[in-house]
Image 1 (cartoon, rainbow, N blue to C red):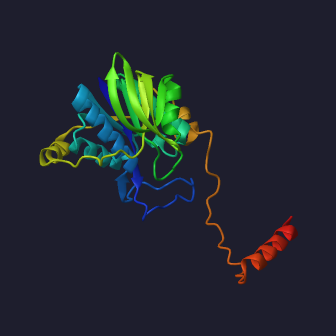
Image 2 (cartoon, rainbow, N blue to C red):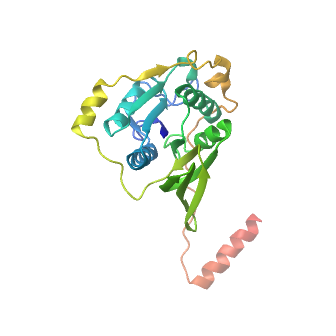
Image 3 (cartoon, rainbow, N blue to C red):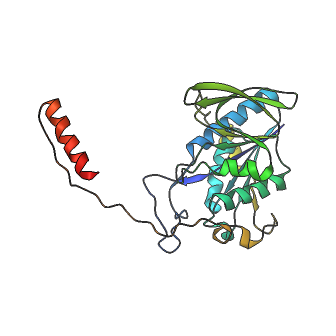
Length: 259
């Protein structure tokens, strides 16, 4: 069994900056953390490896500093990691990001199960995981809380919904979009930290993945941010006091004037 976890290094929410020329997030030199939902995905992948055997590989697309995030996954037990980095990848939207990650997954040799966090805290689109599944023409299960069984080429996942939990069986290979688990991600051991410092992380660029520059980054993104601005703060309003029936008549009058 081979498990691939796609992780993302996101800016610390207390230190987000925007490039005024490209309207994209500035990542270089910014204090960053591993996207929290991605660490739940790592934990789920490691627990399946511990139970059913195989190897766990983490991959991340980003600037060279994203290697720190991959080393963090190694410190908790991931077997090996790949950094997908190239200046031409900068400014990618979710479609271009999915396309690049799919190329990396195929370069590695594919996987039985691909894991992603349900969404990233910087973009909050939740589109990359489904984009990967669609591009690879494989099934996907979103909002996964746990995996109960892998047997005879099938996987049984526990999925969260607005009405509760449901069990879904999916054929391998499959992509799982992972939400918060019933348990917290494991902590790195001393041995894991030492291994993470020494582990060699292979870098993959556009050339090694055979990706034309016009298909990646800003050039390969059909959606782009044209303008970023801070909404004006509106302070107009009034406070009305009185009996409930009086306030109801007052509010009804206001609504009639609007309509």
